[in-house]
Image (tube, rainbow over all chains, first blue to last red; front, side):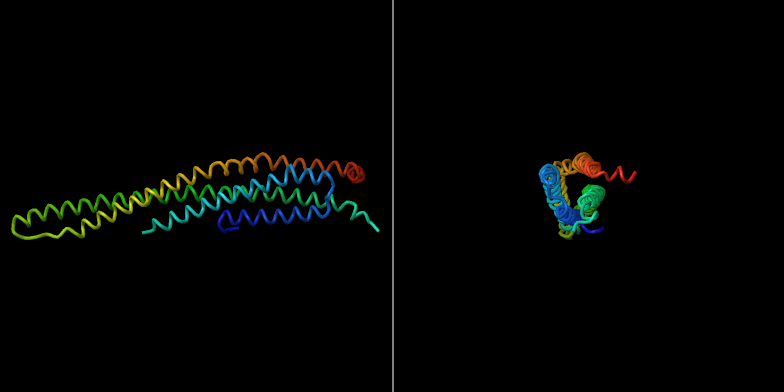
Amino acid sequence: MAGRPHEDGEILLRELGSAWSKTQEHWHDDMASRFGRSHWTPLVDESRSYLRALGECMELLTAAERDTEY
Amino acid sequence: MTDVADIHADIEALKEFAGALTRYRHAEREVADRGDYQIAATRASLEEKASQWRSLLAQRQADLATCQSAAVTDGQAGGRADCHAEAAAVQEAEERLESISRWQQQVEDGASAFLGPSSRFRNLLDVDLPRTEHHLLAIIDGLEDARGIRAARS
């Protein structure tokens, strides 16, 4: 991967989401529900929050470089 | 009809997902490192630009002083030196330095705002995710024990 970090991070999160969806096709008991609530959802929420912040930060850095290129 | 492969499909799916979590942890750590590197690189780049414009400003101020000094001499001799270009060059350098300084401050503010989410994400990758992977492996072990797979394998 060699794109912008937050975009690469979003691709990785989408790939992990696909892996989780495949897993759910075979694993759907109470334990799976508990795992989803206590592990999967916080993981996705925290990842999204970070990647959003990273994206905003990267936009700022790009603007700073562009506007000071004389 | 259900065959053995179907019965154990959930275990295989869990194993694949555990592997996906591990790969995610490593790959996102690299993403986070690249993000931190970009911040450091932009800080360094802005400081380099500020340093270059500070040098240019000093040079242009010296040029303006030389011109103004010559203007005084020329005026005494009845001539008229024009220092508008030198003054404009000084003003340009001052404005660009101010602009770079404003961007440096904005980058510092942005980097500060990013610290919280970054720190929580690092914690997720270094602490929570390994814990999740261990938890998943324990579930897999439990399922294999319950179905006698490991006993049968050994």
